[in-house]
Image (cartoon, rainbow, N blue to C red):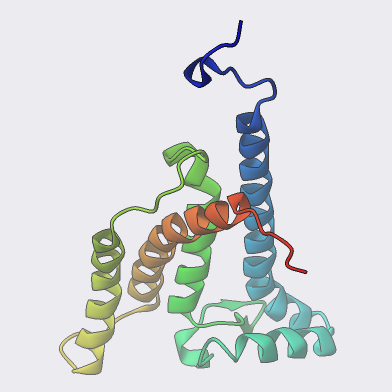
Length: 175
């Protein structure tokens, strides 16, 4: 006797594969993010210890993303980080967000939060910039990095679900 299709029971669990894939994608994202932010700190250390070529490559690479104004940067070993204080906050905040992601949201969830949360996280960074730009208030390394860290951490909650969704897509070969 044949059973109705509604009574079908899967014989192999694709949920376990999806879960494993999600953990791998998250772990790879976390590892690459940590590598990326470590370069921010490695640049001044390399420069201070005579590894000028390595430091130059790192500084030049980050110059594509940041103005690197020394007066607006944190220093280590007498040399500025590879990015300014605001970018340092954004990148380190993003790394913290990626690392904390599975503690806050399940890797099985594929949707990102409502966009309004990203816009809300942008407000302190925009205010910090605007108040300084218009001469209302002089921002500091701390205000730049903290507002940037908030924006970076929240951004991770949009990037990680996107990467998880892409990892679940099945691509077909076309002949």
